[in-house]
Length: 240
Length: 217
Image (spheres, rainbow over the protein chains, first blue to last red):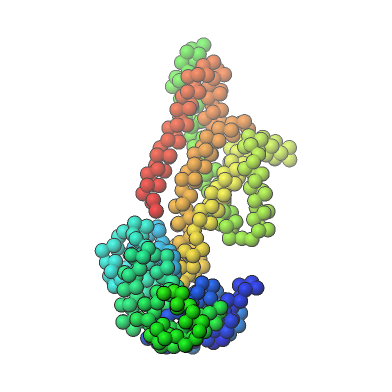
């Protein structure tokens, strides 16, 4: 379980998270929606300890993410993360991209790492691209590679930061389909997204972020189709 | 007076080959030492804060801005005046290596800075440590990006090594000057020397293009 407890986070004078609390159970898919600058991506970065927090607490399976004695590299192994920009490693083939972390972080043998990487790449539909260099692929394919690369570490949770925002419209579908597949398989996910249809159909709950706080959270279909908070209503009417 | 008309007789080829060999040796030393030091300094500069950078930067600026020939003369005169003159090869290697280092460090710094922070964040998010990220991501991507510039600096170091002749190092240019003063046939000899530099440099740049194509990213 991921438990975010009253987290505050500032960049200089700018407070981006103003007391956020959120519990995500194993197997749950939670989508986070909201305008730009509302702090939704920052929350993911804080959960993964990429950004420090100012106060509050984030627990992942009971481990305090931001405690000094926490081994953050070890913690990140169970938190797969995919970013808006796919960041394929350009000097490695698709297979090597996905096999790198299992090999050097989990110290697997090369064969073992390749085997797992291959399985995950087939999983996201890139089984025929193993020996291709990622720069030769479309954004959608590279984003699926990023998903497979994260999955190859066998994470317990996936943090997805606007993974379709930088994609050409016609490539969005293939990435969302991949995420849908993961959700069906029971992966625990926190998705920051602008895809309202995806948030409604795939997630269990949706949280609406507004100026650094969760303005509304509830069952996905209810929040998207029948929001209670006027702020959520206003946001959704603008997005549609 | 025979040598006047046979500048490239067998007896002279020994001298020329010594010059070729010495040019290659001092170039290799300067490129290797300059690359290693440049790599370290370039990495440190891409990592460190403004103060360290400014300090490093001004030293490197001096090395890069003062003509090599002046650095060579000043350095060898200075150590000579201090009472412990160095062999021309040693003095030349030191100056040429530092000069190369100054250019290489900028090349490598540019390469390391070209690897986007988000790429490194992506690597860290997979559980890779800082040093694993540097070794597996930043170094290989950065080095690929600057390989053409590295090769360019290396090639110009080979040619710049001719300047070490001013402090008495018997490299290719110096040996040819001696031959010229004996034979009074500068045209033939200098053309020959030019061809030698070309023969040393061309395969390198050709090989460089091949490597570049192979690791194009």
